[in-house]
Image (cartoon, rainbow, N blue to C red; front, side, top):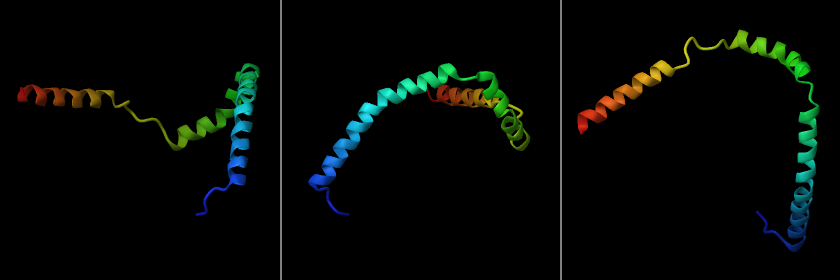
Length: 83
């Protein structure tokens, strides 16, 4: 791997400066796009993908919360037995 020379360093500094200037402008564009988004149309556009995902990857029958609580109980019982 070659080391960075003065030309590379200058290019890197310009690149960083470009993105420093572009960042706030891009943020303005992002906020404007969000404000102008047609949420209803976006939901309708994604409906087919959502239904396909449900078909191919159905939700789990449980959230895992009951199992998590059982593990917490076991851990608490073990800790109580040690004290």
